[in-house]
Structures are given as structure tokens and as C-alpha cells.
Image (tube, rainbow, N blue to C red; front, side):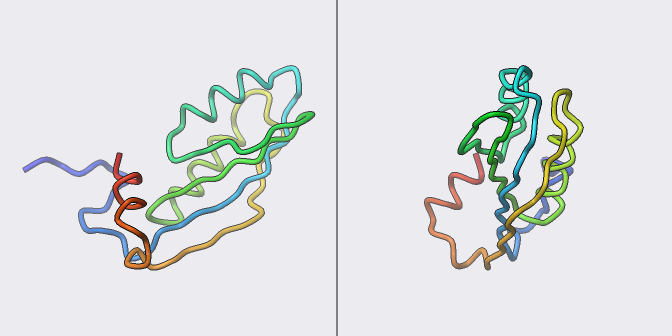
Length: 104
């Protein structure tokens, strides 16, 4: 029996969470911040312009969202990371393609 990863429950989660985060950063640090954010996992950068970045985070629970937001906020060059939207839906409402993508 394989041990579960610490941030993944043994059972399928009852809900799936998605949140958008507005990140304010020092423009000269943009390449480093972009690379660090992209390396987090469960995160996608949607837009970046003049020291602002829009990021979405997905995960099986609110804790994953909070962990990613905190990690972004603490990155060198980031001045703030603020959640602007959060949505949770029953996992049963997700398509099998969405579930398969999330498990990678």
C-alpha cells in the first residue's frame, strides 16, 4: 500500500475549488516571479501586465488554495497576492476529463 501525499486526501474530494489571485509584483522581477509561480503546480498564469499578474489555482480543498496564495505572496519581488474570486463545486459535477487532468 502506497502512502498518500500529505496534501491529498485518501478519498476523492467532495468539492473542487478554483480561485483567482491578483498578484502585484516589481516589474523588474517579473521573469523570476513568473517562473516561480509556474513551478508551483495547480497554478496557471492568465495575464501579466506592468507589475500585475492574474493567476488561477485549482485544488481539492481550500487549504490548497491558501497554500499556493501564501507561497506566491512570500516570493521575492511580490508585493501582494490577493484572492479576488473563489468557487467550489461538487466533484461529481466535474467531467471525467477535468478529473483526469487534475490527477496528473
